[in-house]
Image (cartoon, rainbow, N blue to C red; front, side, top):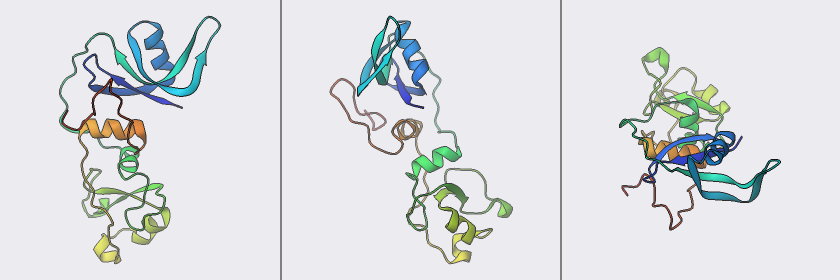
Length: 170
């Protein structure tokens, strides 16, 4: 299912929503399409519109400030661009650098994307104990970075003159 980025009236990223929810927001007049998918259209009996990639709310919504991005398995895979932290192949699982049985938790700094083979080979050990080396160190993305990664799946969004670069201090 396609996801659509929702921007606040001031162009700040708010969330990602399903294509259906994005179309409903546009149809109700609560949002405008800022960027559409080229060549794809949504059709109904009386309405036809482009498939929205990015929509912007017409009215400003006040959002409480969130300092940290919430951790999730999908978030770790997207952050690491679905690449194994040990060999660089396609990752399908999440590995704990310090295993949970050794006191490691579900945190951004303790989890990495891993292919099934390396995750099984490392097993219930640290990378040093297993004789494995991390290609990239885990990091904690900012909430804006996590939102961009969720929307793009790890790819960069094309920046158009209508909206500024998101999550980069702008």
